[in-house]
Structures are given as C-alpha cells and as structure tokens.
Length: 187
Image (cartoon, rainbow, N blue to C red; front, side):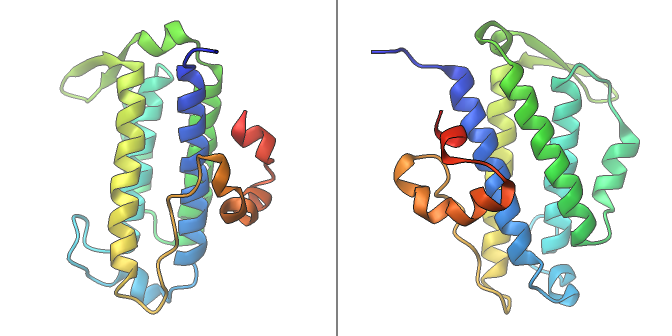
C-alpha cells in the first residue's frame, strides 16, 4: 500500500480552492452591485471587501512562498479592487499560481523554511505550515461570504464537495468550466 503523498494533499487542496473560488464568484456575479458592497456584519464589512481580502492575503503569502519580498502595491491593488469581474480574474490568476507552485514542490521543499517579509520584520515558517494556513484562511473567509449571501437575493452555493471521488457529479460543471478532468483532479 502506498504511503501518504503530502504533495498530492496540497495539490488537491489547491484545486479544491480554485473550484470553490470559481463557484463563489459565479454566484456573486448574480448579485446586484449594491448587494455586493452593502454593509454587513462581517470582519471586512461587505461581500466585495471580504473577497478582496482573500485575494490580498493570497498575494501576500504567494509572494513569500515564491521567494519574493513584500509587494505593498500588489496588496493595495487587491484591497481596493473595485468590482467582481476584475477580482475574479485576479483571483483566478492567483489560484492558478498557487496550484502551479504546489505542483512543483517536493516533499523536501514542503519542509523548507520560508522567509515571509512583513515589512517591519521577517517571519520564518515551514512551507507546509504556510500552505495549510493559506487554505484555512480562504476556507474561513469563503464561509463568511457564504453566510453573508444567505441575507441576499441569491442563495449561497455549496462549497465543500471538491476533494473526494464520490463528489464527482456535484463538481462536474465546475470542472468542465475550468477545462479540467476528473482524472487530473483525482490523481
């Protein structure tokens, strides 16, 4: 029996992340702009601002994971993204960047220390811990958006059937829209 493949786990999480973000953005696109930006009782105050925050944090950690320095301009651009269409394009690019990063990793690379430039200090953490944090962060804030959507004219989407084989039928449309195959997702 083969052992656990940590790279496979992170690859599947990155793919599930892309699928969930794409589905969430398609649902949010059905909302009038006023509902996207309406003040809501949430950390960032609106659906749009929460989506922007997800992108901002992804950019922050991806830059570090790829060996880069703090890019304040890219973070400010994400924080102030004015509309869902632009944000969806930027998030898709970020999600695919994350997937590409994970697909290149070896087991040894997952254990490497990564320097995270926070401006006033540099944090050092293992790559696998940072990746786990990124996926947890996205899931957490997508959950908040899911809750906020419950108070809008558009029902929230199902966001948790992307990793196991038995969920193939539930994700088939999303996999097709992204141009992926079940074989790629389940390998």
